[in-house]
Image (cartoon, rainbow, N blue to C red; front, side):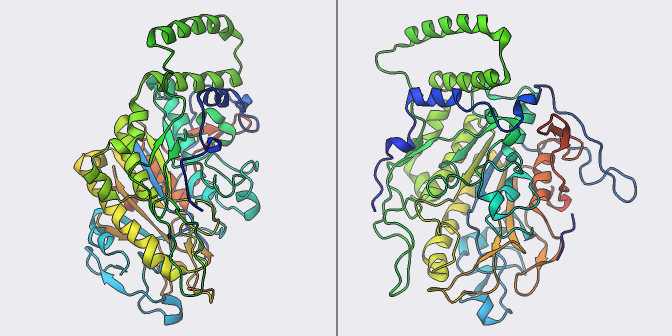
Length: 510
């Protein structure tokens, strides 16, 4: 596709979900989005295959599944390409910033001095330096749903009718047509960690939902149970207040911190035999009512069966409890929120969850995570980059040593990059910039040891191989065995539409 040039304590009840609420939430709001009630439960239909200029089936083509599971490590707020993995040592000093470049394990390829461990492992990944789109507004929906362009109005309203389904929801829908679903396995199909994106700062924004496919395809989300460990977290410069809260879990967490579902274990006064008796009675009642079930009722049943399965099958609950992991492994990842989330993602995939998205999100400050409008240089040098430089190699080592990369695809992505120009805000700053940024990929079906695409001398725009997020989604669908153009999902009116308008990035494939 060619693109135009205060202290954190144990989580309070408002972030937890008691058993009754857990089940009640499954029953409420299940009407879905828009005209979801119009959608049938039939199989995904085929759309005409697109053709290239020679008349051959192009871009999509026959897809053979190479991947069976997927982990997305999403760096929300967006890293500066020039200060991380696309340095520009020959750019003017006022643009390139204060960090130097270093060599990597790929000859002729440089990285920022802030990422020495990542640089030593670059031969184990595929780095695409020419990611690009047109929406400079934290357009996570563009990165993750196939929406081609966004705007602050669209992005700020999660219920805007222009939103498309989160690609994890699309995959769950497609897998269900193949007989792979929560109802069949008793396992969540896809999950989000550590909480719904922007939950702590702006709940109204787009949050990886299934849109018109219906809420039964929304990701399952646990709760974080823990504390921040550092009283002084965010780095700052003299005379400038830190912009992050004290005891922010992204800066550090206590070893007791973990993830859990509330209400997924039986109360002490309800033994297993009594619980099974209740289920028998419930099934008898359900049998009498099933004939008149609506789509909303079917969606409720989906959530109820999943909730009951998680109460009787401890696999997911155990996988979420990262405190069960050997201390040596936890320490390799580092006691930070993102580090422990990445570890939990590995454990969930091992347990059978097919898709896990981990967001490097914010705690209480909108101008946090990788959104370095202020204190840009100290935050990258003292906080963000050292953490990422520890977590990514540890994750690579852990996944590879367990053989998980043979069947697990991994995306390390964000929603955009940052401006070549540095602002005069305290500590410097770079603004939102979707003209050029990078994505990193490895695992099932990916040809590693290569850097694809290139940007101009200031990291502003691609000069080769411009790659839209839709192209990445097309590649993901392809690696799971779905032709992104010939496979379809129903739209709001039940009409078949292709999975994405993007094209498979063939150079990424092994």
